[in-house]
Image 1 (cartoon, one colour):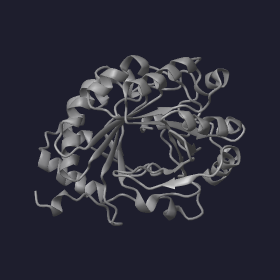
Image 2 (spheres, helix red, strand yellow):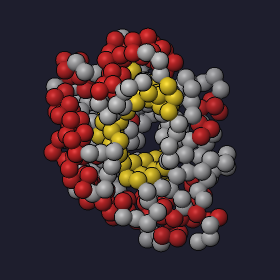
Image 3 (cartoon, one colour):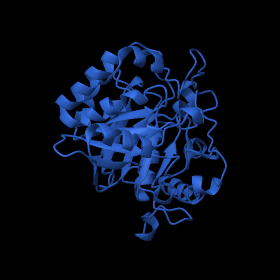
Length: 335
């Protein structure tokens, strides 16, 4: 391939360097904003999800086109057997610079070292509350201590970046904004607040629960002091990052609704059933599994991916006054 061929971009001039791969739709929690009802999830049959070999083939084709960062998500990715081996194989693909993972932390205490040994250095852990009883209400499981032990083990293991993802919800956990942000003062964590999003028809989302990142930032500064911006690093994600003087960690804000980042979006997603999702808020998906299982070569996959990514929509800005919407549950897209 020529140098020009290796640039994967859409018709809006955005270069795609970041791939999020959901390896399973199964999860051991039932978070109200993701998979709210006990027994409501119809898991995908095993034969419908991408095999690890298929994920590796896709990742190699994406690497040929300029993708440098891969994030494994779910469902809960640690619930799928052999994820450490997959992470290691993806990290070994030429030109892939970073393989990271998003987890709810339930199984992390036992798996942190094996993930680290596989080459994972950056890990995101979902945690919306520091109150065990509230954790049980939000997630449907009384497992706060499992997550906290997982965070402690991740720190002990030596991951170079550990992010705590907290979905901020008015009337649910907004009274804990300062406490969650305060974790960054004494621990080497990047605590990131994410706006509550309308993802999934069966979730509890409502605009009444939405809290803008500007409001969250004001709450943090009112309690902990002035925030100083931190410049974006390589293969940056959607968060704007700040620090408090003397803190061991940082604080981030992800504002997909109030201050969308569509103009700089550098990512696409692959769902567990092998569909390419070009925008979280667009239900238009492209079937990659069919290409994989029809025997397409690596070069043929790369050509197909180049044409597919060219269709990436502009994003929320194109909705004008419409409310953004995503019919698929987050657990079936990849958090």
